Each structure stands twice: as structure tokens, then as C-alpha cells.
Length: 334
Ligand code: ZN
Image (tube, rainbow, N blue to C red):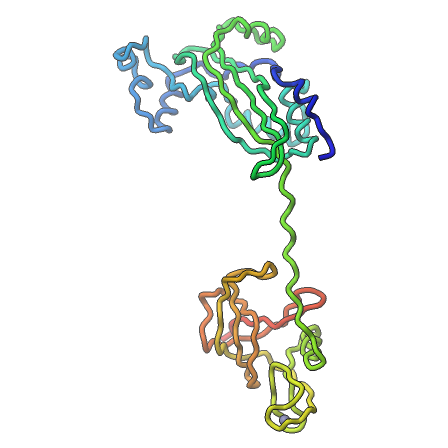
């Protein structure tokens, strides 16, 4: 890692990240009802004053797990904030949290994943209360190597307060006012900022064939877009794979003819394992009986489940790279 911001990060631990923010809505019954319904929580103390009083509460309470919900800015606010961030616009001065995130980015830890969240509740919240939240940088870990990669854990603590109607609107004044407010709960939210894993290597090229004096014509023919078959010039017998001599008459003289590329699937196999990185699996491979009479092993360009013995197929010559072109067979147009 080129940059090490350990000292700068340590200096930010314990700092408050900007002025506290006040919840858009007071704690209220409609939001409590929607939350309880969404969570499937039918505890009656979230539903009626009477039920709450029966268990000794002064009245209906908010589910403690709603703690963070009161201070969230909603979809519109989130989208606006994300749009500003994407445009590189910083609203106001860079706060301690912005600084931590920037320093971690500069260390190369640009990926982020949330790892855990704990909440502490001091007392239940009741309708009509106004919530204010303040973020504190609680901890930045040493550099750690995890299964995801190398990076640092960042723990932010959100302290939730109940504030009065007279809570100042001026951000600067809020910092002082919060000190006198009642703490009702805290949430520790931990993330791992880590270096993204290096990109998976591109698919390697297909292995190249071993080319001999007897087979070079075949591979050269494919590079020219032609599927060639070896022919004995003495007796005219076609043969594949290529051999130095004719199995019928023994002649060593030969040339080649071009196949029309039409044939029938004589047999096939669907390869699952072992997997070679240059190929996609499952990999259908056909033994094609060409109309000229010889058989050839080739890739089948069709879904594995669609391959049947006796199927009529047609070849096209596919160029895989500068050094390799191969026949690929697909179902013949009927
Ligand atoms: Zn022959």
C-alpha cells in the first residue's frame, strides 16, 4: 500500500462528525404502526395506551429497534445526498467522518461492506418526542486481512438524544445544546473498508493443437475458413484424422478436398469435469459424421439438452484468436 494514514486516522478517533441532525418527524403512532406491521411484531404495547398501561408503562411506546428509523432522511433525502456525492459536490466543510472515509480511500481501501451493528437502549421512546442524532468516530482498526481482502474496520457510534422544541436550528449552536440533552440510545455501526480484489484474469485462450507435417494443411485450411478432408490421391479414399499414409491402398500421396460442412451427430458427450478455464461448461462436444463420409470431433453450438444423436448439423468456421480457427456445429436449418 503506497499511503499509510494510521496517524491521521488515530487522531480522528473520538471526534464528532459534524453537527447533530434533528429527525424530520416527531416520534409518532402512524410510523410505529407501519413499522410493527412490516416487522410482524404484534406486541400490544406498540398498539394501544391501554395495553401499555397494563404492563406498567405510561402509554404506548415505540419499538426500541426503531431507534435509527426516527433519524433517517428518507428516500428523497438519500437520493439527493447520493447524487451530490456522485457529482463530487461536498456540502459544507468536510466533517470527521468524511475525512476518515477519504483517508481510507487514499490508502486504497475503496470497497465497503457493513459487518455488524449493535444498539443500546436507555429507555423507550414515546409519541411526541423529538430525536436528534450525533455521529462519533469510535474506532478505526489497524490494517487487517480478511477473507474479503485487506483493509480497516471503522466503527461509527450514533448517539440518539431527545431534544426540546427550543433545540437550536443553527448547526454551530446545536453542538453545545446536545451536551445538555437526554441520551436515549446508541448504535454502533461497523464497516470494513477494504482494497477491492484484483480483477479475475481474462479467459485464457484455447489450447493450441499440436501441428505436424501431416496435419498443418487442416489447421491452415481452417484459418482460411475452409474445412478440409485429407484424400488419398491413389485410390481417392478420404480420411480423418490426418495420417501419413492411406489405410486402404498404402499410398503416401495425398491432397485434400473441402467439406461442405454438413453432417449428422454420430455421438456426443456433455463435458462437466474436469474444467479447463478456456471453455464454458457444460460443454457439448459432438462426433460429427460429415456427408463426405469422415467423422470429426468438434464443438456443438447448442444447448446441452438439445443435442440428439442423428441430428442434422452444419459447420461454421469460428476464429477464436489469431492462431486458432475451429469448426463449430449447430443444428441445420430444416
Ligand atoms: Zn489410397
